[in-house]
Length: 66
Length: 487
Image (cartoon, rainbow over all chains, first blue to last red; front, top):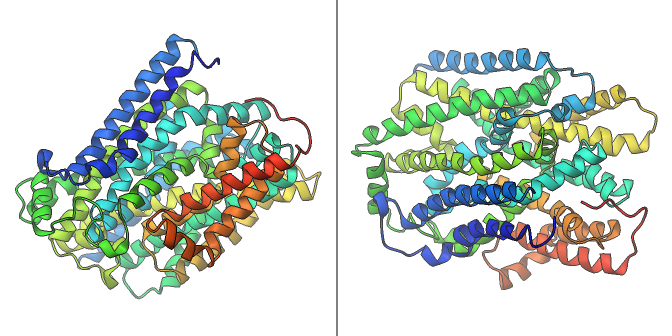
């Protein structure tokens, strides 16, 4: 597994950016999507995002035969 | 609780039915060997792996614990939303490495991994004992919940000790009869039951408390309890701030796969694709925490008053107050399985580590069967310690859970360094573990954390100390034993 071929694995950090690093930044957003508190909506969106990100990485891995 | 007989009979029927089904399912498998009993013969395909994995994630900690946390604190319960997705993103990278090492080395336990990678049997003994300690704390969570269900369903005439003992006995009986394969089947049954039940309760909860829809529950709770939806939640004095969420979420993600039972579950997978696909789908399942939070908030709006204000009992109390007895019976039965099944897997893991990594190195020449029976004997002792912990402590399920993660986090640097840094040594890992425990447990460390990292998760801080010492000590020591295999 050379460094170059596996560089797309860094995408796996995106969920951490969304659900952890950005969590304090969205804590006080007053918006209420679907009546939900914004930070709660944000975390749920983060879950869906994680599945999408892993799906992309899985696909790229398969294409590169890793 | 009115209508107790109905609730009681349903509860018992669910538990008994699942156990019988699980035993029939597991009977086809050869249970004679350690590797079949503990890691399912490394043949777990997509479905059974999914349920075994989800079964370990959705325990009483997740359901009763998070509902109670939402009721008591509000926003801090969002920690649940981060737990599965972050662990999956990390697991996509980490789990195949662990699986590969397990397959190549014929490893059964997590301590095997340490002993082999670092070329030191003694490190396997140390890691084995540390892993068992963390597992016992995790069993404590399940016993706390199970004893609570017993007391709320069967009546308060039982003391806390009696209910905890009964809970432990039920768990032991299940493990003696079954192995990992049976447990995975029971995990599947309880997950399906739980999802159906939680959905049914969520759909009806709004009407029970005079809200027009599920989303209306969220609207009302934010109106009546301003600040509940964002950090620090309902009780700022509890210190559950943004800093707490960030550090606790990272600590949980880093610790999830380090639990010895999760390690063994990874070994049990048939191939890498099974693992990768599982990490892709598993996060979506955690959207179901939406319903758990909904029920916690509904209980708050309904003015639910659990016995002794115990947040662990909120969900059961809410259902007992507002639903017919048969619904209480269904929930009690499902909650029993939620505790019983993961609890059995935890005991099974602790026992297999004890047999293989603590007893075997000290008495060579013991047969595979001999180790199996020593393991099973040790299990009773571990269950006993867990009962003692359960009876002497009265913390919330989430708090006990976070201390289990703090304990297991002590083994994380050794695992990550094994894959990331070839110079890490056995002595280095040991020094890190000792330093980490000191940072976690020494009373002298607490004022320091209070001053410099007030609301940070103590487990993550201790893990950082552990890592720093492990790296420093590795640089100072030369490797003991043979050069490890490259992963």
